[in-house]
Image (cartoon, rainbow, N blue to C red):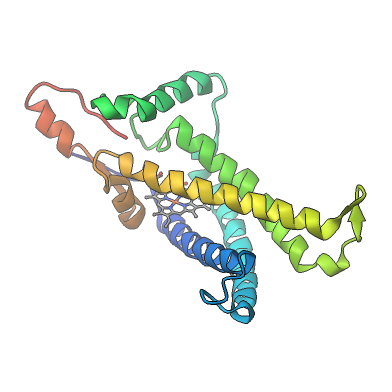
Length: 218
Ligand code: HEM
């Protein structure tokens, strides 16, 4: 059994606060978009959505700062030479290997806690989708100050479509994210890691070791 401390306190606090704020923004956003007044009255959904959006912006800035000064940023560096092969191995595992009980192609270490697919998706979400979602949200908030048209199209319509599209993409990420985190050594290995900070693995490998099998990770 091995244990690695991979998720420092600041990262866990950021992650769960970010998840909560994102879910609040999602539910209030969906309620406003589909005019579901029975779910959340419109005059409640608007200020709650605006507040969670502002707090999400602050939490995103804290994540960037934490990654910059807290050492976690190294896990977000993509090795372009290795990426195609690592990605192929990882995708192959998720669409085939996992169903035939193949050992995981990636081994978690203090230097590399994220596999290629996680790195790519987290970089895409935190460094591309999230900032765009935030910018479109702020543009929405201050739409009265924007020019009426952009490239001959209504600016508010453009901002609304961008915000909506990005929100759907983030929801898609969340669904895949929550599924993928259950594919660790046990369905709760990764969840426990994000709660306690410690990534523990090896219980299954130990049992298999007794039968001469290889250790697998996630
Ligand atoms: C209720 C919903 C969520 C659950 C249960 C959840 C769960 C987890 C777990 C268990 C991990 C650690 C395993 C791993 O490294 O893959 C993780 C990591 C991560 N999650 Fe989530 N998550 C949720 C929502 C979100 C949302 C909404 C975002 C972004 C908008 C997000 C972004 C991330 C990122 C960037 C990491 C990697 C952090 C790092 O180690 O640097 N998660 N999540």
